[in-house]
Length: 272
Ligand SMILES: Nc1ncnc2c1ncn2[C@@H]1O[C@H](COP(=O)(O)OP(=O)(O)OP(=O)(O)O)[C@@H](O)[C@H]1O
Ligand SMILES: [Mg+2]
Image (tube, rainbow, N blue to C red; front, side, top):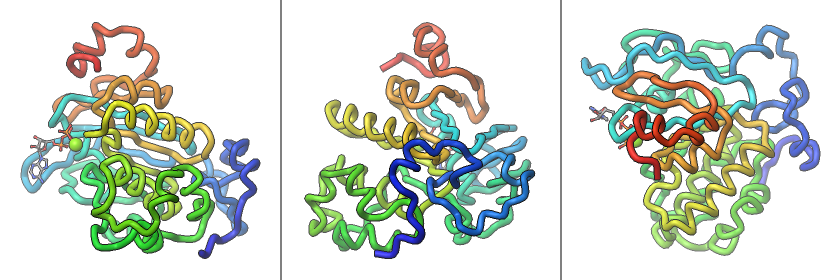
């Protein structure tokens, strides 16, 4: 499989400095970005209001992620977490504000071009192709870069044992791993994940949470992790955002929320 120019795993593991490696972990031979662009946020939302048709769901959302930074997004059901990711992907109506990827305007860019600009989405519904094998599901997504089949299968060894299974012959956990593996293979700069642990048995939640943590700490990707499971979310990244009724009501340290169950319960309901 085409792998483009490979970075050595050791460079990747140690290479969290954005001046050395691209956010996706791949070394770009033609890295000629001006210093201004290099300093630009990986992803930025400026006063974004968005929704479905006339309906406004997100209101005045501002958020910036530096390169290589990850955040967790938590909040009750229906507060707009999926809508936030959908808005970045271009699947909603943008009523106001701007969205930038690596300093370049993203709003106005057609949906089909956004993935190519460096966005990877792991949707809440997983959206595995049921009549394609695991191998084929991976192959259709692959684009040159750090993440190759070998690397994603090393991250998810369970998938390596299921390469010949069809998409509809996988457990919920395996489908979730495939969905994440597929998004990684597109070699995005920013990875958006929508409730990857939803519906998984507790033991699978734990093992997936461990993989996500590894992904965050070992790669230079910027990740937005939407999670209902506050415990998983707050353990995932140092910074967390809480959404309530389409607005950001908390943007700060995860540890501060994890250590204050009362406040957490106030913001997102009962802690899990
Ligand atoms: N396609 C749509 N058309 C119209 N309204 C929608 C659509 N999708 C979601 N909504 C509404 O937007 C609001 C936010 O929904 P969203 O799916 O973003 O919430 P969420 O925080 O992801 O919830 P959950 O935790 O259940 O996944 C809800 O009121 C929902 O009913
Ligand atoms: Mg959702």
